[in-house]
Image (cartoon, rainbow, N blue to C red; front, side, top):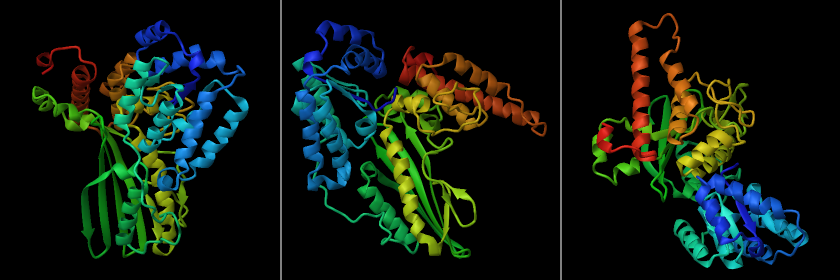
Length: 441
């Protein structure tokens, strides 16, 4: 099941209170609830021919809001997509609606705000796996669910119309102009606008000039998202080199700020363990750029001659695809779902040691980063305990090349032992508390 799904159904096919209580009591997570919604509502009514006035009202409200010119920067081009759905609803009159491709994968905060406004305005029943929001016919449940949703996503603000940076009229001639265009891109991006410049590094020498831009966003739940863009111009070769990398999530550090007694644990933990790297195999679905040198480049290494500066816009298009997916993952649960269930090939594909195939996608065990990530996710998410054991055995019994000295081998083994200990320490206290903190240190 994908992370972004929205189920809508007419109030007259809603479940009874006792049925909802049973489902909510038995389901362990949002995906289990969505599964029950599919079985109890969606599949039982998807082929039933009947009027769906609330569904029609939902789409009409959605369409009326996103087509307003003052919100053009938020929803450009989406009015036609919703209009097509609106036309289908008028003809099909389906009682239950579910389409993750049209609505669920739209990840901007502004769009979710309009979704929940449409649910409130239309009176339709809904379940959103995006936020675990349930709006059934019970007025108390609806009122509290929507109240929480509107606190997460504030009302829309009118956005001043700006020039589109993907136009080839805006071709930068040097690193300074590229830097300004990156900032313009971030300001206009529906998710990029929430990132702040955390740090900027500059280097200017006789051979090359480099600008490093480090961006950070703190989500409403305290999760930190970080990445960096490096812009380099080589005077010697007359080439630009652009990279976007170090995409990482910090899911746990905000907990340290809320509890003084954790300072003892913090001293025993490498803070890097709280950051989950997004760069494994990176994002395969973006377009590869083939330079005149015959080599293909992705967004981690994008090089072109100064005469071909128009390719900077291709870099921005790839950055858009990367940033949209990266910034939409604002919780550990969503990252685990991406890791296990996404149909987008994001991670490396080599063999099946760690993971069975998910949509023909597997994770390689041979890189230290892959081992770290899989171990963290399986531990924090309480999934695949048998895989955790195999990862430990694999790491501690790895057959290193003959030229590795015994000292180096033991150093690696010690490093993995500490890594696994610290990950389990974080999991026991922050993710799935089972012990008193004094017993953990």
